[in-house]
Amino acid sequence: MERNAERKFATRYGCELAIEVDRDAPRSAPGTRSSRGRPEPFATWRPQLPRIAKMEIRRPLSPPIHPIGTTFRKGRNNKVAAEKDDVGSPWAIGSAEGGHKAIHPQLGTIDDFKHLVAAARERGIEMALDIAFQASPDHPYVNEHEDWFQKRPDGTIQYAENPPKKYQDIYPFHFETDAWSISGKELCDVFRFWIDKGRAHFSRR
Image (cartoon, rainbow, N blue to C red; front, side, top):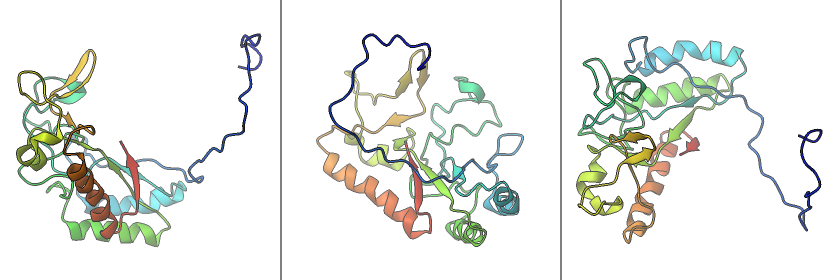
């Protein structure tokens, strides 16, 4: 950039700015899906810990581990219609089995999760969880607090879009709603819930 950029309009900012960066700790995601796309139980993650430690990955990042919705479930590669064996996107969080404070039943239980975190710490590994503040149409939040989400003129909840792609299986939270003081407290409780379970590192979406 220094060699090829046009510099005649270059300028300098009037003061120095501090830059904050994460500490140097390589990270990647442990395998959480089988070859058929099914969620892999926590018990199958634990044997991977020695390999992860050997690669000097100190903070593996896991995708969301919560129940996945069924309404408007997408197929592989964002196909509109899911096929029989498609489990949906892990970012379409929430079903009748729970939301952001629940674990996908095929992964295991809260105790299984705690054992995984403890086993990782024994090897100097800090597990990180992707916290995605969005919900599937089946999330308990949607059923109990529709006012936490933005609505279209026809009264339906606005789903996520990245034109030309549409994500009907995901409802983003509306952070400018009048109910923000209540929904904000609940989302803070999501962090507190997982910190209490031994997960102290997060990647915020």
